[in-house]
Length: 338
Length: 297
Image (cartoon, rainbow over all chains, first blue to last red):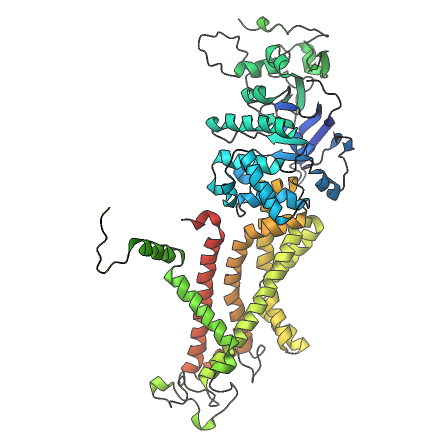
């Protein structure tokens, strides 16, 4: 799904965190959590953002919603650049951009009935009166597949799946155009995950909302996304339409991620590309290509020269020296696997 | 289904309701609440309940023991060294002490909580300044400071109450700052901020109710302290001035006669003890009630 005019545009986003500045004589170290990330999300589109834990994908989500300020780079929602927006303007903008959190119980106020919490966005933005708000909250409960009678319950009285449905109802009650879903199902039981993902997909059709879907679970990302971007150590290494990415992954890291997804068929023989070691520290990212320390295909050039994200096919971008030109073939993975 | 034995036992529904009531309102809490209510009613209706005015003297009947220990039936809890009725003085003293302690504690709680929120919200220089004040307050011998202020400015009731209020604010400020800092990073605060709520709304509607239980417990801990501070200062002669009276002032004045007429000191002491204990018990129970995750146990 190519973007006509993007709803959300993120350009060269950088977020560095200083750490260890408190000690005497210690030079503060800098964690490069997000280091030059650009992408776009079209209206009613889902962009899946995948990567290992610690690669900066959650920070990207927070930056996009202004819950954290970028060190450099800019975010544009609709035609509105979000940098240096006054706090009040940010708050008004929240009508259009919402968030679904990883831990639904933590995201709900333990001392407020869920019905009031669902209605709270209406109250915050001064929409309709008290009685109608409660009615809208009950409608939203029904829309996310819960009984409206649950409105009087407290969050801890609901199951994890119900809690996440409440969070989704609260995020969608203002009919936003864009929602960041930060690992929305990873805290849930596997049996409930599919229901919640399907609910998100149904809500997208009903409310015409675009998602930035952050997850480390490739199966779920493949299920819900239109396009997928893969992050490694604060940078996007590959992005492509869903089928293209899963059928023809070009970056060795993407290939390794996809190869690691279990296939429920013991007879299938797969080329396994196994990554060794931990991701390097984002305090001292390796020079050159950041993946070269774990890449089975790394060459001399990869150690010194950082690759840039290049378009190799329609909508398919990859940052790897070994992928050459439009219509490039996969890097020869057979070279290192027997 | 078996028939409940008709003799002696009430029907099962009523007994279930009663056991739930007992579970929800333990007898000790009910007794404490009743005592607090009694103290409040006595304070409010002092004029109606007291047989005499608290300054009325009967010099012929000085230091008389309570009626049940052989004193005159006229003064059923005895008289003090000026022949004033202990019952009447207790009733008025309770009123003064309760009003002063409530005002003092509430002032401290309000100032401390507000400063705690301000410190946690603005961080940086504001936070440093407030926390330095907290440390200064905590490291000063407050009684000496209060005595110095009263000696310098002269004793009056408003100033006395303000001084009681200043005592203890630092506990609320420290508690509130810490809890707000931690609550600010918690999921629900982040979530409500992401919904577009203003900081004031987040603090007043979400964070304050979530930390209120701790502040209420602090209030119930602080309240006896305020009464005791009032006692100490009145005892030293810098608090409530005669002819006004308070539980602390009665206790201090009665100390001189402890061997010969113990009732003058012991009776106000008992009222102080029972009142503060009841408030602590009810405060503890309230804390549990405020936490919905404990409510259905």
